[in-house]
Image 1 (cartoon, one colour):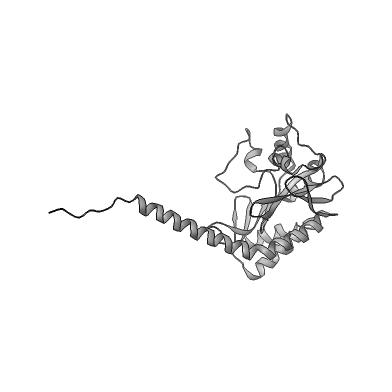
Image 2 (image 1 turned 180 degrees about the vertical axis):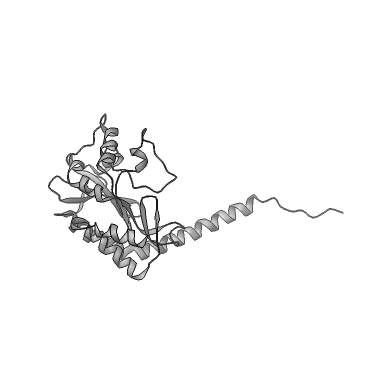
Length: 234
């Protein structure tokens, strides 16, 4: 598996190089990795959840599967043609990713089947088609911007990431206010991966405390549901 991961990372060049750099840095201090279906899982983080990882990378798609997937949206076409050029090239190499708390959308393989069906039993990327037919509305982007990713801004709000035809990227708050902008995908990935990496330890600890509190609450509920034992009356 390690050799397969090394070969996969070697393909993350150009605009995707910051993802490769982040993974290589993780591997230098934590070599725990595994492969699950078409995903590489890197650096397990049980404090967040038993099967949580700092980074998840999905293998790229074939042209056949990309075209098959796009047929689903013929009746309700996505708002942008970007998927057919720059982001389509990304999907050939990397079909979505989770890098710290940054999520890049992709094509769930089960949606390439005939008939296409959601499958929540296996780990899959967040659906870029759904993002561009429904999820995008809360961010009020320009009509020709592709909604290709998201990440937390606060406990109550996610930023939306949008790719324009000229290759520039914007992050938008809910409601359409611009949080940041970058000239290229590579600049975007460099900045946002660094930002999410810097806050990841705090996020990991907060999730650990949340799980502890949830387990304590559930234990208290179970204790209250147990029937009380009464002594014999003489």
